[in-house]
Image (cartoon, rainbow, N blue to C red; front, side, top):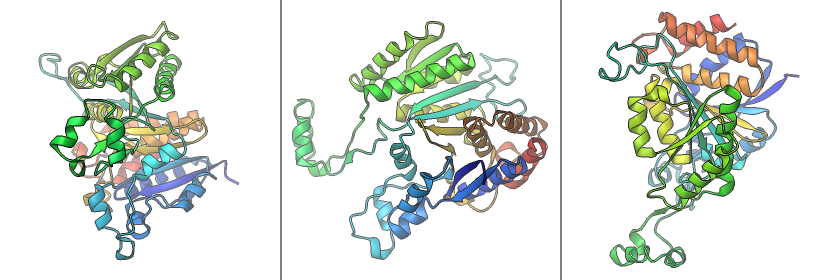
Length: 384
């Protein structure tokens, strides 16, 4: 019997390509694992009306953790149009399966490392004024994103139901919308955060900083406008920070941090944010280290975890084995860390760094002509 059972979820588009690359590397490294195929993604929405079938949920509950490729998501109107004829007009509502997984398994922490590796032609080099030499700026940031609440909680309305409007009118700021627009013309998305959720993600960020010897944790919020939800996050952050006096705790508005990270990315180490702001700023971080082809992530709960690269499904490249698999392979490295296969994780990252530094095998985004699988095989040669 294998030491680990890993839910294998390629998903959509290039998710299949990069997962095949991951399997090449994991097999060559001889990870003692059984890979359990699991159905998830757009095809199952279209044919079954459920992008996360019950059989997949059952299978996940019987595995050690999950490895996930990529997902296709579309607006609700398009999603309903792509259902097979038998499922149309059944009142089905599309909901992102990865968001559902995060909520269902309480994968409360989304950790997204963004690290520049020497030799990557896409590394950020800064402005000429800030960095006249034009050399790479060393970047090593980790984003901690609250994964189950906030704007991605899925509590939305269109058109706005009268009972919801009536409840909202306890706040006088709401009333003019009915008069100006009419309930049938109003869409509402909620930003629901809790003391528990805010406190937990802040603790995760500070604990990681303490464990890894990092000296700064920065909260990303917008409390000057989002006074209640942003204010709650700010208070929780400050309360948690009191327990870590040796770590610098500061904060920045989401708009300001996008400027400061572009100007001085090397100044930041651990970043913490609610769901949407964490999603936004982690893409910015990825851009500084070469793009989403270098951006892994881990969805972490107390007893279960799902690992996924942060890039999308890129349908136009599906099956062409063209896209960069490094984000997926660094995601596999995070999975090995979580499994406490520390030596194997170190070996995999070292192999990734070596292939990048040598520059002999590169996908198109790095100026090369090699395939997804050729890059994976080059990394596997050094990792095995």
